[in-house]
Image (spheres, rainbow, N blue to C red):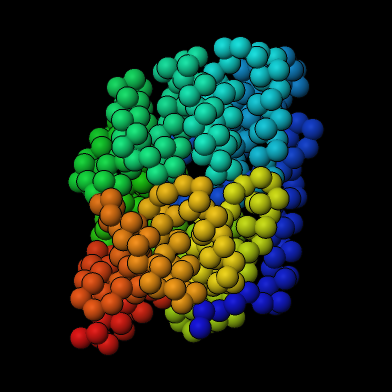
Length: 436
């Protein structure tokens, strides 16, 4: 039986709420943060134009500039976009309201021809998982400036997250022809990975990394390569790439999380726990919270595991309050570690909005944990049908299926990435032994 959220998580949830709503720094107040999009799209590249002192320092500089020059529409657009990025990397959905206001201020100052603010609105919509809105705003921005890097990248993200994969591939090709910079190239690589072309994705990322000079660009691209290696079960390569990223930027949280997953895959549970505890202490997002909880669960520490799973529930509540569609996050976390009925309701709601491999997998697994395997098999097959090599998808299909199909997909999961989940991998091995 999967652990359930319990009353003893209340203190931790309150602490998280305080962390996410306190200490706001903004013109007129505010907060800061957002989860990564549900592991589907390539992580957003760092925003440009904020100087070399880091995102927070760049935001403070923009705030000071706008206090002196409050009619600078471009400054307001840059600030709004920077708030979106702060939300993404710092795990505080309250920053979205500040982003909304800053972008609206920019558009009020310059209603026409303001592609920077429109691209910022597209990024904000994508951050809130409103991918139709993101696509609409990205297209509006590109109608003004067909070469806008942020709008080109967000258009790819939106098409991927809406499950329009052929259109996403065409958009990636077009973006690469127009503006082949780091944000576009990493998305170009991810579209290749979605179609099963791991080698092509790796080559694109390696070329991008070879041309990177700024420490932030090196950290970002090396981490993306590390994540790709981890998904293919190459833990040594993942550790090397994450180490490269952390040498470029010792505080890069995505690299720390990637290193934790690679360490766990190699059996270094203690090292993985140390890394993930540092990650969630700084940015308590659903992915690392669940990963840390499963490491605790795998070693029998159910009390600590429940605390991590409870914090996911606290985060989704806060994110929803700030306009984020969290149905996919809810479905994925609650299916194994929460309210299974709520997981199925959320998965069905998300599937009704968009047909992607990730929403299909979430729906399949939510149906399974609710005892509805006959219904679950079709979305499980959909999730594994594009060529994307994801061991958790393979595992879910194997658990749901029977007979030879079960053995095939459980075997694929473990051959691809034997460390895809400390709990799931152990369950897959047990099911294979039973089936043999």
